[in-house]
Image (tube, rainbow, N blue to C red; front, side, top):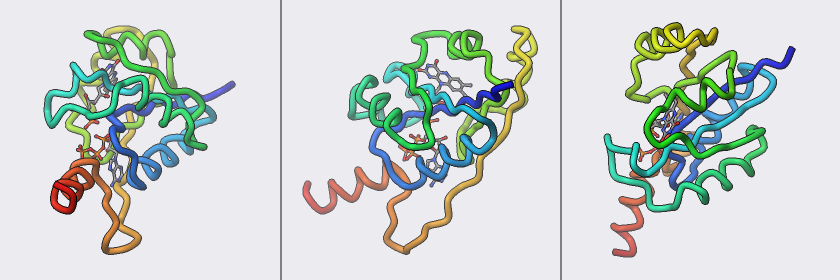
Length: 143
Ligand SMILES: Cc1cc2nc3c(=O)[nH]c(=O)nc-3n(C[C@H](O)[C@H](O)[C@H](O)COP(=O)(O)O)c2cc1C
Ligand SMILES: Nc1ncnc2c1ncn2[C@@H]1O[C@H](COP(=O)(O)OP(=O)(O)OP(=O)(O)O)[C@@H](O)[C@H]1O
């Protein structure tokens, strides 16, 4: 049986940290589906610059990714219910509470494991492994 993994995030300006996360998530199963956050749901940091459909299309073009979808506007568990994954891979630094997610999955009758991916160690000292760092660097050098 195909083991489906879900990864999710903003993916505004892609960098090797995203690739690391998505490759690790893909290795947790046979098929990787990525949920791309809507602008309205990114409220714990600066809003993304690129439109959601653009972020989705670029993520979908990555080798590790089988499918990318723009997330639901109000109920972040609605796409999960529809996709019915075997694993949800949380990013190493994501603010979501693993146990709260597991409890909501159980409440909705979704039998799915919640796992954490690891962080990528910089391969070179000048690697920019965060969208925020890339934006800061652009402002510093071109602003
Ligand atoms: C299991 C799960 C499902 C999610 N589904 C959606 C969704 O359907 N729509 C959405 O806009 N955001 C969704 N999100 C939220 C974002 O993907 C993300 O966590 C956050 O808004 C963006 O911040 P980040 O990239 O720093 O994680 C989901 C998050 C989790 C953990
Ligand atoms: N350096 C990294 N190593 C491993 N995973 C990462 C790294 N950077 C981001 N990710 C993962 O990619 C997913 C999407 O993250 P997001 O798009 O918020 O990236 P970000 O570059 O960290 O953004 P920002 O810098 O704006 O906080 C998250 O699950 C996050 O944990």
